[in-house]
Image (tube, rainbow, N blue to C red; front, side, top):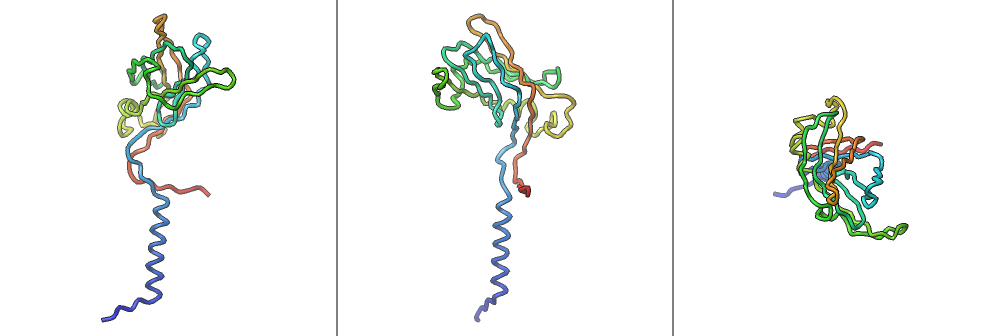
Length: 186
């Protein structure tokens, strides 16, 4: 018995393959539930601590810290607040020098100082405090009454005084794990 494939069958098979490949271009897999953050708080200048150049959040919810040596500061904790209510605390208690390296140090061309960049990964704390499935506060759904704030507590190890860096212009978003459809805007 001889199988005769006509030209219409070939066109249909190639059309189906083409459509499948086209659809796959618009699908992506999110491996795990996670939060992202948009930190638009203005740059904070600490007159008492000029060696502390920047303390802000990266998109991935990692806390980014840039400083010049010598530094004798300790990251104590991070408070998560909605309005004036503390909804959770991430206890860190690490010297800034002990935090994970974010990138190689660099020499600032203007000041000729060596800048060190560190990060503190907080994704697990976001999941613990806000919910692994965004069930606690429904972040990013428009159901939170009020504003979301994050307070960063840093202790000066020389004077034993703690100061607070307030991140008050942030937005937090939640993305669940699974297959997502991406539709580009035209």
